[in-house]
Amino acid sequence: MELAGMNVQQFRYSADNFGYLVYGRRHAIAIDGGATRQMLAYVKAQGLELTAVANTHGHADHTAGNQGLLNASSAEFIDYRTLPEKQFIQLENEKVFIYHTPGHTGDSICYLTGGTLISGDTLFNGTIGNCFSGDLKGFLRSIKKLLGLPDETVIYAGHDYVKASMAFARSLEPENPAIDRFLKSYNPSHVVSTLGEERRFNPYLKFNDPAIVAVLKRKGLPVATEPERWESLMSLE
Image (cartoon, rainbow, N blue to C red; front, side, top):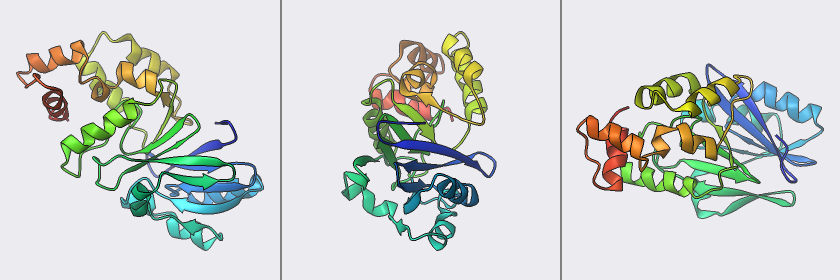
């Protein structure tokens, strides 16, 4: 996907993981570089120099490609654990902005470049990550931070869980037409959505939506406050 001055290329690896190259005219950053060979081949074919390797969080399926990329290039490793202290990574004349989004893990990071969000395991296309940190309130704050972005923001996630997530969404809202629209556009070779689409079909972004609140009420779950609605929704996992 081409952005104003930046490009983002998605790479599938393992069963359902995604990694990304963010690049300009000459330089590239690899984020979650498990597709090591494909990324290196792409960098070479585009005449780029890989200058940095970074991650969305520390789980092994996201960091496993780091060393291979570093060994094959002169790239710098940018430790994701230091990134919450920074506002952005400079890439040529553009800024890749850092969003610290604890919840899935305490160290989870999202990257915003132009109008594209590389969201790791914080926000998937149709669902969100498991709250392995145990910090449900922190996860809610992180999701609300992302919900502050424009509807046209492109969502590039850390995994392809589309089919399972849409089946769950349908179990809560069987008449929601946005689910069918998204499934018709789903392409496993390029998995993408916009934040506006996510607001319409991702139940974990709809914790204040009357239809979802009604589902939670029918299940006898607490809904009086926003944190209660969020925790009730998360309990359905």
